[in-house]
Image (cartoon, rainbow, N blue to C red; front, side, top):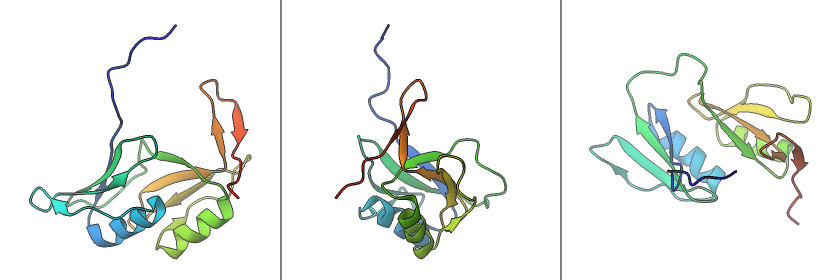
Length: 133
């Protein structure tokens, strides 16, 4: 059974303390340029996400103090090269690869997200990502 949802797109907003390093980091990972800082210096949108939606940075005064209760799971072609790029951009690897290859990483301010070279369907069945040649 299927019913119409109420959302057209999902926009993701990430709390940050400083735009420059975090905006450069996410812009490089998404392959897009950051937009201008707007709304009195409070927001900066990085670009359109695959399938629509946006990643927006929101400037906040408090530092990250605990694990996020919601995070991004991003599909990559190759976990090792994705980790190398993330680290090269100022991020870091948080976990060792889990069974199946998922890895937790973080941006320059410690905002955690997971990467893996697989996708799951609605029932949780894993499908390996076909590498782009």
